[in-house]
Length: 67
Image 1 (cartoon, rainbow, N blue to C red):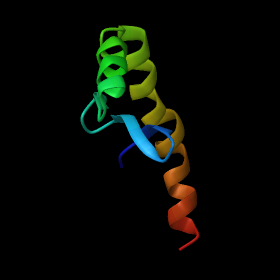
Image 2 (image 1 turned 60 degrees about the vertical axis):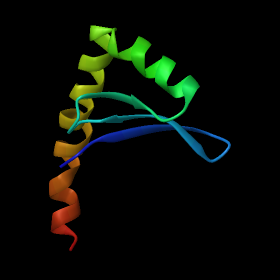
Image 3 (image 1 turned 45 degrees about the vertical axis):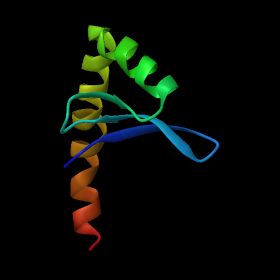
């Protein structure tokens, strides 16, 4: 299971957090600057990593039961 949180502007992906990578990745100049700032904030990174457990792992059983 992978948790992905993407940030878009004008249909262009600026930044993405992926739980498999464990950090933010920027895709534009602005996104790279944001990713660098967010990756230097340990509380932001730990909060995003916790989203996988808090959101994905609690709901995966619901999705599999409905198939």
